[in-house]
Length: 68
Image: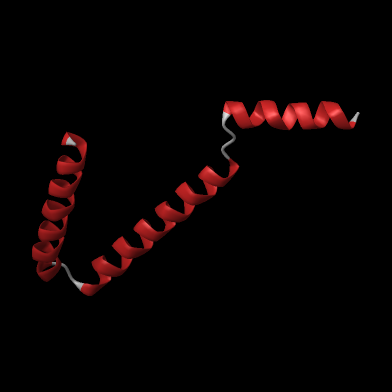
């Protein structure tokens, strides 16, 4: 329950801070910041696709052994 409250508080604070600081940034900086955040999200997504959890690795090995 505490984690949920901290997460909600963090989202509200981050949104407020972003809305306030948005006024003081020029358009070029906003564009670069959006590109950096987008590329970071893309890299995180791709790394999660290729991440194999240990229990899934055991299932893959078992399926491979059965096919031999």
